[in-house]
Structures are given as structure tokens and as C-alpha cells.
Length: 293
Image (tube, rainbow, N blue to C red):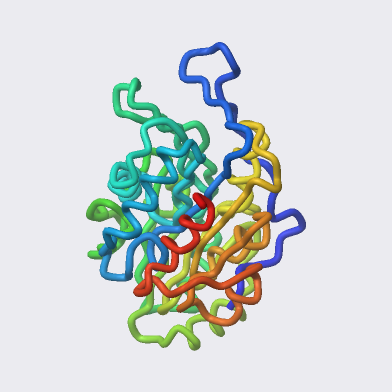
């Protein structure tokens, strides 16, 4: 199932980047690329392993002056190790499927700061989903990048163990991301059920398994990347995006050069301009080497 159609899937996020001359300034280098890279299934395999070829090509792209933007469904904390592995000391990352944008700068106390966070009221979506999927588990990433859940719910994309809470309290939480998982359903069954619900006022996408990510209306990786592109002055033709999941579809369509990983399903490949090797064939390294050559 494809994410819900948006009237403007690339509306700029509402955040600012320090202007030239201010502390922490960032200027896009003419003649380089804005490389927007998914993590799971692209930079790392689904066991979380990054090959030497991908690490070295990522570091080479950073060293060559390209703007490497990690663009992931992972939360902030789960994204930081990827930023470190690529040696990004000055730049940006888009986390939580566009819900959180970071400015990376090793001169900062934590080496980064959040420059945009898109939140929404999850109460209506929670009520609707709980009624349709009574055995589903729910977790929420809140406005300060913590995860809360009504039962034990761990995932590598969270970056930490979700804290227990009641369903009533969860509905009162300002959410960046609502995660829904149903172990009793196949991905196909889950997608059909969610499609029939007709969620309103949010953006959502179904993952590889019976897994749903819900964000604020209009928020995708593409929407936040477009806001970032405009503010750092990167030309549209300088944008390159690589990904493998349904949550990457808008990003691949947005980029001047959208590249799907070889293991992606046909719907993702159809959204891209080209297809590279699979994650097990170091497909991302192939793309990065083509930019560096």
C-alpha cells in the first residue's frame, strides 16, 4: 500500500537555517550534490549491518564536499550512529520520516540541534486504529524524542526502549510519529485493513511487515528535504535520493535523480528514475561512486 496522496507532498517544513555570517553557517557548495540517503535497506541491511564498501563510499562523499543528508524513518537517537559512521560533522539529517530535522555541528554541545519538529494530536488515529486492529501494539515518539507504549514494544528504529504508559495517556501525547504493529496479520492483510479505515488528518505508510508509521498531515521525508533544499540553496538538479521502502516513494519522486535499491518492490522501483544493486550487493556504494567519479 502506498502512503496517502497529499495535495502537496513536498511542502517546505517550517524551520530556519543560520544565515551566512552567523555561527554554525552552512553553505551549499556549487558543483556538489545533495545526497539524501535512506538507512535500513539502503545504508545498512535489515540486520543493521553496514559493509565496508558503503561506509568508505559514504565517507568519501562527505570528504568530497557533498551534502549527505541521512533521511530515515528512524528516530533521532537511532540515526546518530549512522551520522557518526559516515563522518558527518557539519550538515543535516531528516529523521522519523520527516518529523524531525537535525542540524549537525560538532561545535555544539551534543554535536547536533533539532531545527524542526512536526507534531500532531494522535488521539483520533489511535481510537480508529484500536477499533479496527484490536490486537495491534502502539508506540509514540513524542515531542522530545522519547518513545512511549502501552505494552513492551522494542525496535531498532526507536534508539531506546519505549516507556510504558496507558492508552488514555498516550492519546494525550503530542506525537511526532505513531507506530502500529500487528503480529497477528500479514503485511497484505494489515495494509487492506488500514486502507479501509480511511485515516484523516495524518500521513501514513505501511512497511514491509504488518507495520504502520503515522505522521502529521503532509509530513514525509520529501516535505522536509524540500524545505531543507530551499534553505541551504541547493539546486533541484543537485538532488539525489536513494531508498528501498514505501516511505521513500515521495523522496524518490522529489529528487532530480531518484534511485531505488535492487531489492525494493515494484511500486518503489516505479517511483525511481533508476535502480541500483540490492543492499547485499552494495547498491548504495555503486550510486555514491557514480557521484564521485
